[in-house]
Length: 177
Ligand SMILES: Cc1cc2nc3c(=O)[nH]c(=O)nc-3n(C[C@H](O)[C@H](O)[C@H](O)COP(=O)(O)O)c2cc1C
Image 1 (cartoon, rainbow, N blue to C red):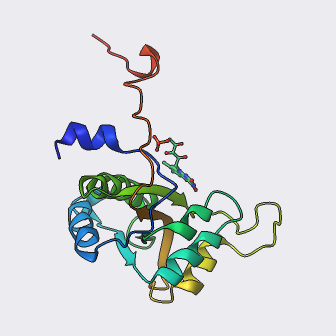
Image 2 (cartoon, helix red, strand yellow):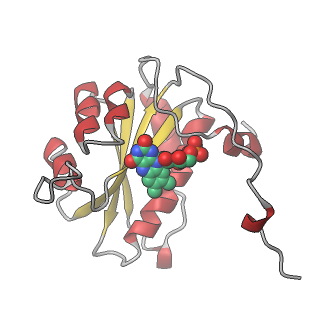
């Protein structure tokens, strides 16, 4: 797909057909995303693809709001960062997550970012489990010294999202000449 087409096609997509997601597509997209730049070339980000549908769907409970779309997803990729490798681990991981979403669109897949970061599983219960701990308990394969930035929910879209407008207003794009 043409680069401009990929960028324009990407929308956060939260409903999927249930069609299984091919591992080769995930692998190709991850290989591209791993080319993302990182602060001082620390390469602090790792990606973990989850195709075990039971666990993909359980990831939907990582928060009590804004994550249940994972209960329908065909796959997920967990975006991890090595805090010890770079104080910019979150920024590095966010850049890679964005590139990953675009690479997945290029494979014909639909995605949505589900944030983990410092969220709690129950937003109104301050002593509830941290979302990151929930994800790590569900996926003991995650190295213990890695942090979890987000989970990218993946599937085949069961609707065609509206394309994004070109841009909302001139104030978001400035030229100083
Ligand atoms: C840092 C970040 C965190 C996000 N977290 C969530 C989330 O937890 N759940 C969700 O459904 N969407 C989440 N989104 C998706 C946004 O809601 C979405 O990008 C925004 O509404 C714009 O829509 P678009 O992606 O279709 O352009 C997140 C996006 C970003 C960039």
